[in-house]
Structures are given as structure tokens and as C-alpha cells.
Length: 288
Image 1 (cartoon, rainbow, N blue to C red):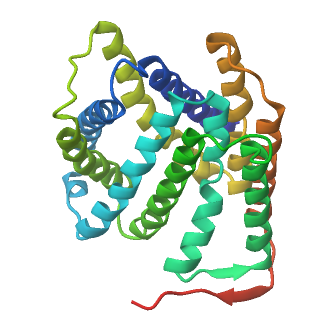
Image 2 (image 1 turned 90 degrees about the vertical axis):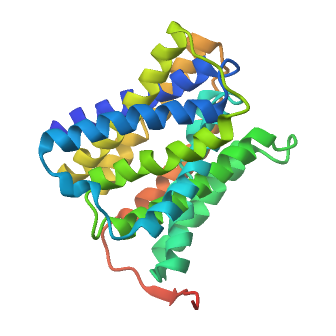
Image 3 (image 1 turned 135 degrees about the vertical axis):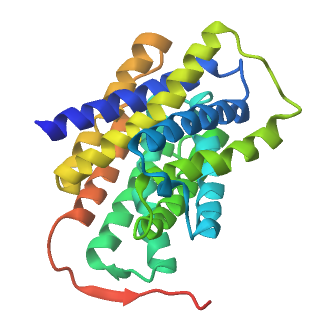
């Protein structure tokens, strides 16, 4: 029951963040949204660390890896928020489900994780899901879809570096440096495109900044209480929920192909995390 509670919190948080981005699309630039998100997140995380009286969480010995992580995370965020203003909400969320697939590939290359039969099948299911969603045989693949796919790859690289950081860093430290590093990047990129938000826009910016942190917090707690398979399955509920929100609030079409493609991705993720002792095929590594 606790797992369900945390995952419902995550679903609500991530859906609210997406709706907030859609409400601000065309009014405030994506870069400025990311700037305010970092400001709000930095203030909240700093207050949490001070209140916990664990000021050592402000320190890190791996600043270079934090910079690499947040460079690619920033790219992922930018593409995701940009896609939310150009594509149906369900389309963006469905393509986001490719993140575990790209993570498998990238982790195999850079972390020297073994490539197994189970992982190969998972990747193939994920690629099949992408094909179904993009439907390239019917029409030219939309530029916005490619942007979201690129964002998913950026997120994947971010996840791989986060996995490495998690061995030595507290999650609050990772979040603190995420906001601290991405804030000046967004500030430098938004100098020539500055708009002072009005009251309504501040409301949605606050929703985005707060929901980003609560979403991460809820998923982290869910992962502590349940197996990854349960979390991934419940997380999949984001897709039909956001599809319904898109239909009700934005008159978006309800596309069966999006749900079908995302189902293939879910199947691939479930195959990968299912317990077992799959046969090792090979280990891919890169010479430094």
C-alpha cells in the first residue's frame, strides 16, 4: 500500500510538471523555465539540508562527474520540455519510456556491464515500440519526436552517471549539485531572452519546480519499498493518465499506436528486470 502511495505521488508530480510546461509553452522560453526550476529546486534542497543538520551533504569529491551528469541532464530536460510544447502529452511520455533502453546500451559501453540475451530482447522490444509510435512508413517523422528521443538519450547518459555517483553520494547531494550546476547554464543561455513572469506564470513555474523534486523523492522511496518491476509497472500508468489529461484539457487525439508502442517498451523493461540467470553473450567496453 505504501508503494502504491509513493507511486501515485510520483504520477501526480510528473503529470503536473508536464501540464505546467504545456501551460507555459509559447509564453516563456524553455531555457527560462529550466532557470526558474533550478532556482526553486536549489532553495528547497538547501533548506532541507540545513534542516536535516547534515551540512556535509553540500560537499563532494566528484565535481567533474557532477558536471558531466548535469550537462547531459540539462540537454534531456531541454528536449523534454520543448517536446511538451510541440507534441501531444502522451506522445512525449511514450518516447520518454525509451530511457531505460538507451541506458542499457550506454551502461554496457561505459560501465562495462555485460550484454545478456535478456538485455538484447529488451532493447529490441524498445526499438519496436519506437517504430510503432513514430510510424515512419506513413509520414515523415516529426522533428519534435526526434528532439524528445534525443532528450531520452541525454537522460540515459545522466542516469548512467547517477548510478556511478550513487555509490558515494547522498541523493540530496546529487539534487543539490543538479540545481547548482544547471542554474548558471540556464542563466547564461537566457540573458538575451528574458521575460518577467506574471502571477499566473509564477504559479506554473512553482508547480514545475516543486513537482520535479517531489516526483524524484516519491520514486526513490518507492524503489526502496518494492522491486523495480512493480515500480516500472505502476510508472507506466503515467501514459494513459496523461493521455486522458491531454484529451480533456487540450483536445488532443487519443492515439492507440502510442499506447501500443509504449506497451512494447514496458514489455522490454519488464523482461530486463525479471529475475533470472540469463546467459551472458559478451561484455562491451571502451578503452580509455
